[in-house]
Image (cartoon, rainbow, N blue to C red; front, side, top):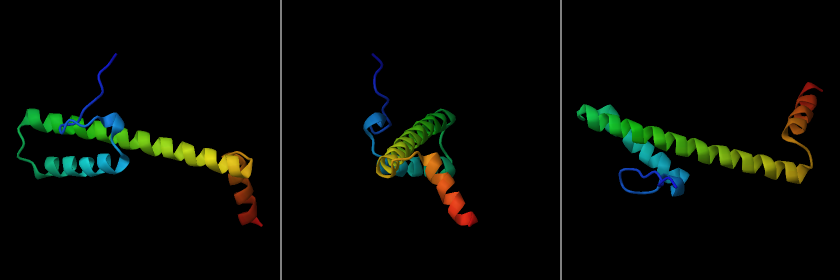
Length: 92
C-alpha cells in the first residue's frame, strides 16, 4: 500500500484542506520567486508546489461535482438541460 504524500511540514496532502494547500502554494511560489535556493532545493520546492497544485485542483473538481449534483437534485434536470434552458431565456 503506497504511503500518503507529505509536504515539507509533514502534513498529508490527502488530508490538507483547500485553504491550507492554497496558502502553502503561495508560500512555495514566493520562495521560488525570491531565488537564492540551491538547485536541488529549488527542484524539491517546485515538486512540492506541483503536488499542492494537484491537491487544489482535486478539491476544486470534487466541489464542482458536488455542486453540480446538488443542482441536479434540486432541479430534477441535468446541468446541460439547465444551461440550454438559460440560453433560451436570454435569446427571447
